[in-house]
Image (cartoon, rainbow over all chains, first blue to last red; front, side, top):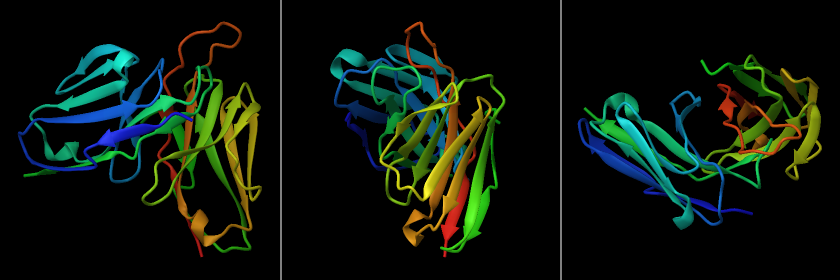
Length: 111
Length: 118
């Protein structure tokens, strides 16, 4: 099956700093999602981004499908950005298809 | 609030108990999923239901039994669990294109049920 790798596994930053999280995948995909998992376990949808660049406030994401990677940018970090960030891709072609997740990047923003 | 609810939020059960987890989606979707998140492991897909039919079982032990009575509700029946089954169980839903192919739709997750097996 498809493999998803995320880096770095852990990241500690001061409030106000910028960060870049990376997601590599082993095969071509037609969808990619980024999630933020809060301390209570809720997965919050950040981006649905099969290709190109999207922005939402201080967050933006870029997926380069031909090179099999996606990047999540967080600017001017706030303590509420802390948590685990996951990327996930469909297991196969699509439709009602399960997602394969990476192991996540654990982000800690210190005041 | 993602439009997907799960109950209970926390559950402690003994190895001989039988319990059920419930998931409900209010998004008008027709595909629902169960995932398991264990400590120090990535989220793992367990089951997929599409238009109430199970379309994927990811080699899950038979002590986990899913049920999807309609497109809005999904259950996970638990019996004779092991301590290693302790985990966060997450439900998700998405749209599906039916007979017309297209891109995979975005999945939305519930808050999860944190299960402890003693």
